[in-house]
Image 1: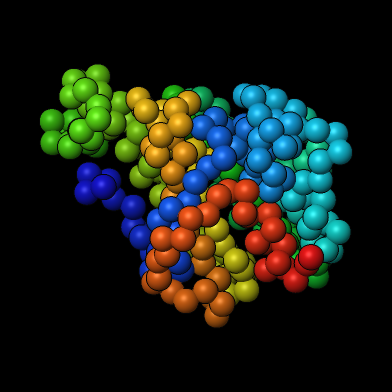
Image 2: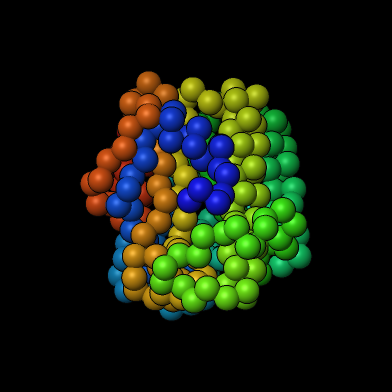
Length: 253
């Protein structure tokens, strides 16, 4: 999108692989997050409605990685139910409608700096910067924006786009800070880093709707020495693929 500047996401694509056909398993946030953490489709894991609870017998990604000897951490917006079904050892929640992810990466950096263990690490960082309510637009000139053809070109639409783009650029800045924190704390070269989203933006025919804009999501994977940099694939993948893939990357079964 030429209206939005995302240098840190662009840098990730140069250093890793971009998946052009990645799809969420739900058009809603908490059911999609349940898929990301269970590797099972919404009706299989039980958390198929907004705020729904996964089944009691479901094993989640925190269980899998603790069994593999990993320390597990979840920082940022949580939005997974019930809480005890996702037993991360270290949890720091950070999100508010007014401040969104302000200070999120400071929490990540603080956690990485205080780690005092030889155990490998599985960490999930959940951003809310592109979740409504969007951040207030201060820099975009709405008259210059290109309105997608499927949206009605009104001042209200342009205002919403500008707020959404502001949130995307703020997210991008936090990605840059996160990558810097990995490097400063010695995790850059031995870490599989995955960036994705749980669903599309809250526009017409997107979030809540089973169209591409509702379920087709960005997906970038960077793994120095393992994933060839500056590559792309049109292979179709699902967010349900994350759990088995990262387990395999960690030499688990």
